[in-house]
Image (cartoon, rainbow, N blue to C red):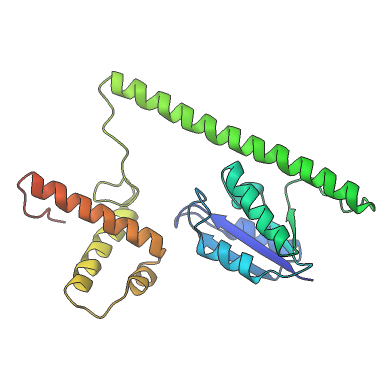
Length: 220
């Protein structure tokens, strides 16, 4: 039996220290950590953690939303943990370890999980609805110009503007035959490969738009 931790933040700018500290205080020695959006289950370290766990292991997370952001994904992940013979412990939820009857303990745990999955889903839907309403108001006022990409030449974050420009430059070298892999570029820049592929798509879209506007290249 082992305690296996999973820690996640959504972006490279965010810090995992608080989660890691809480997991270590709970007795976790093996921690899978990553900086990636929880919008779906396509997360390398999450999947590595699910492959790693065995019978009688306990997966420990600080909060339920670290595992996922919608009810369907959470159900899928929790079921995957159960299928591998492991259990789930969420540090900021009530613990029923003191209840000796395992059936009652499991029942209460499942009730709490379902409740918090519902709350998480409702909060996400509420956020999306507020965003939609805000966009509609901005459009009506002529102030909406679309979402600014996180990584772009126009990003409000100076670090991410630099990372975008550097990534585009390295991708161009790779396209011209330089001996460098996508994983190597991502490692050099300190970003995930999924982020790098997203930047590549953005760069292609930007290039196509410039060409359609009759501009050969946008200078950095």
